Every structure is written in structure tokens, then in C-alpha cells.
Length: 459
Image (cartoon, rainbow, N blue to C red; front, side):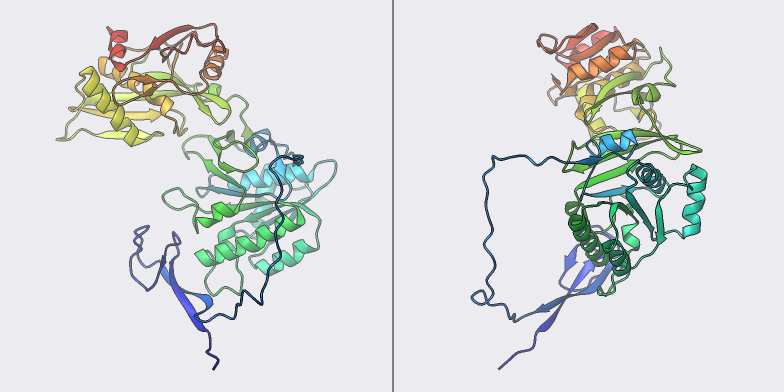
């Protein structure tokens, strides 16, 4: 007796990709309402697979030692983009680019397309837009002065048509803008759904690996700032880039959060101008351009983003609260980290911050994530509370522990060399670092081992 296969169904959240055995109104994973949709996952129940009849081929194992394959990289002609990608584009690699609407993703990739297409070897470059008509892309190209570059432009959302076209091409670089607009008719769901994004990405990635061209996928982001669609998409690609920036500021940060061919947490800095995005060779000078010295609550933090040292201004404002519970407002840093630093200052230094509002801002719109900024934040808060400014030519870095100790951070010499290059003459650093033989720089160094010593700087 032969039993028919039963069609399996599951219920998938279209925002986060969470799977449920039955329909429900609210997704427990992301908290969104009415985003769970029924999807068919194929045949189930009884399977015709027989391991005795369906034998696979044995895979071949090799030792860890052996000749290393040399990666040939294609330069985009945009130094900051090459830096974030690890030194250029690797053939067959897939790069996912995410960012807020209007931040400049399409502008950057169109500029990269034009640069690559204008190389002496004349590689084939394809820009496929699913969001804009051809006329709209041409308007942007004309504004950027790129209308005469040999870029192959098309507007399409059907994956089958795109794959059939690229199969006959000798493409070196392909842009899909955006993956949420692509559609595969074998998948019974709307464009942008978790299933469609996953299926379309799989077909495009498979083609890019086989044909050997670099594939850029532009992705939308959710209100939490993460790339929309299934989380598995970030695992499928080789590189994940986030394009960051505040609309009120004129510069943009391209940050690598995953890179199989280079360093993670690398950043590229661009300035948005009328003619498009322009590279910023010295971001520290840009972030500190409008800084005013001898102002209480302001200090300069020497940070490291990937392999690049970056100096930014940290501003703090402490004022008496008018509420029953004091307010804590943070821009560009982790609010939980600020709460920890304030608790340490109260418990270990005896400072009274429970009746004070604390506002913290990373000037310029850059977002900092490394704990090395703890010491700079603490000094900015103390400076604002005491109304005593720090020296204008001083940089600060160090991590603060819960017991009040100042812990060492990575690459102190690199941070200080960048500060010295920009004209800073003194620094507050964790204790014990200047005795390192590799750690030598011509600056006046103040070593601090505990936060209690911070109060002495303002007496």
C-alpha cells in the first residue's frame, strides 16, 4: 500500500523569521503583530529516500598544511570601500550592504560601479534595480557625473530573468538593489517575505560562486537597525556591511560587521556632498574640526575602529534634575555602559549623581562600541559636574571595572601615535602600559590604576 505524501505547512514571521507550528497573532520573538504567515515547506510524512539505494560520493579530506590559494582582488577605485572589504573585491564573493533609507547605499554602489567599469580592462558591470525605474537611476547618475560610464543598467524583479541574463554574460561585478524586491515565482509568498528573500538570495549566491563575479546585495533595515529578512541571509554571504550616519551630519560610516576576506569592525568614512560621496582620508581631523577647547564636560577619546585609530570628542552635560528620577540620555554610546560608569563613580568615588541629569553625546554622529571609552566618559562627566575643563591637548582611553580599576585596552601605541600626529601632547592611560618596550611615544603620559585618582585631577 502506497501512502501519499502529506504537504507540510509552517507559520513564519515575515519580520524576524521565527517559525511556529500554528498561527498566532503576535510573534513572541520580535513582538510584532499580524506578521505570521502560513508557508508550505514541501512533502513530509513518508519519504522515498532509502539510504541503501541512494548512496552519495565519498568526500575527500586534505591536511591543514598546504599551498595557500592566492586571492585576486579587484580594486573599486574607492579606497575606503576597498579598505572595508579587506583590500578590494574577491571574485565570487557576496557582499550584503544594509542601511537606513536615504543614507546613500545606492549612491555609493553606483559610484563603485562606474569606477570599476572605467578600469582599463573594461570589466562588465551590471546594476539591476528593483526599486527604481531606469529613468530614476539615470537622474542620479547624471547628478553624480557618471552618465557616460559603461555600466549595464536594468530594472527587474524577476530572479529567473536576471539569472538567465547573467548566465550569458561575463560579469565581474553585479549590484542587486534591493534583495527585498526580488521575486521567484516558485515560492508562494510576496516579495520581501522571509521565504522569498532566502530563496532569491540562494539562487543569486549560487550563480555568483559558479560564475566568479562579485555580487552586492542591498538590504533594507528594520526599525531596530538590523537588516530585514531572515538572519540566515547574513550567514549565507561572505561580507556584511552597514552604512551608518545621521541625517543632520554630512559624513557617513561604512562598517564591516562580518568579512571572510578581511578584518571585521573595519570602517570607511565618507562625506556626503552635492556630487555624491567623497572619501575622508583623515577621519579624526573631521570629527574634531568643530571642537572648542577649555570647555567643561568635553574630552577627546582615542579609539580604534578595526585597524584604524580614530579620535572623537566625547561631550557630557550634568545638571540638577527636575524629576523624581534623574534622566540619562545617550547618543552614540551604549546607555547600559553609561549607567555602569555612573554607578562606579558613585560607589567608588563618592560622587552624588542620583540627583543629577546626565546627557552624553559622541560629537559628529559616530557610534562607539568599545569599552575603552569608559575612562573618557567618566572624565567628561566629572569635568561637567565640577565645571572644570580638561586640558585641550589631552587624549584619554581605558576600560573601567566594577571594582573601580582601570584596565588596559588593545593597541595603546597606535592610539597615541594618531593623537601625536594631530597635535596632542598628553594622555591619560591605564597604569603600567608605558613600561612596555614596544610602547614608546613622545607624549606626557598620566597613568591611572583606579577611578578614585580621577577626582585628584580636578582638585
